[in-house]
Length: 153
Image 1 (cartoon, rainbow, N blue to C red):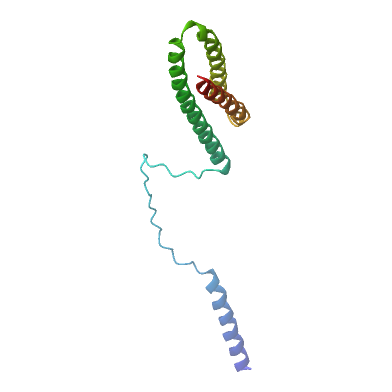
Image 2 (image 1 turned 30 degrees about the horizontal axis):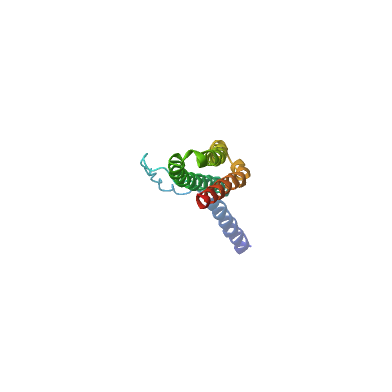
């Protein structure tokens, strides 16, 4: 029996030791060193461009390209109209009346094309695309009328 009580004592002692093992305070963890990464104010983080923003930028660029091309085309046609006006001004009175009417028609077509260009300049967003075909048509009519007048002259 002596051994039994001794075994029981060892058993109880082992359980007690195991039980206190879980209750023992854990060793203190080393303190973490915090570092702050400084970012200069003049270099903002890049912002990812959304597909919608890119579409708006592309549409604006297309509008500006169209405006620029139409304006350059009208300026070139203006130069040709001025040359034709100079020739008409030098005509004798008999042909001058007919050509003055043709020049008035050219001027009206030029004003229509300029009005269309102004509408496009003032439009916003996608609205300019609806005006684009009208502006192209006005420019083409002006160019055709000018070509016809130059051939007839």
